[in-house]
Image: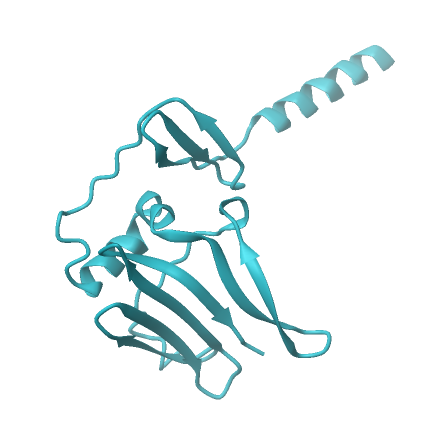
Length: 170
């Protein structure tokens, strides 16, 4: 009887640990190497070419770039300047702290404009893009709440890249 329970228990544990729902993303590093990032953002190098299908004019206008950046996670990771500088609030003393985000702890973001952002019942905010020839800042500002985020992009060697972000939300 105890042996049967033990076998059932071990089978259940093995079944649950082998059933993972992972999403994998490939990014090009060197011509002979690709990094695979799974849903927990563990990085594993493999010898394989990654193919990112992007339009040739992706960097001609920021609007074209940001649309692809928001919808293609492979492209997004390829256009983040790692290590990424981040400024956040330390909620213990409400002072700002500087952080460095590496590929291992980066989370995919979506900066698509939400048409209902200003009319939501909770967490209302405005979103504005400040654009110059070689820099773009996407600002999120809360309406009667503490939302305060900025994402800064720079054109480096003719290509738009996410270079830093600030989350000063309270």
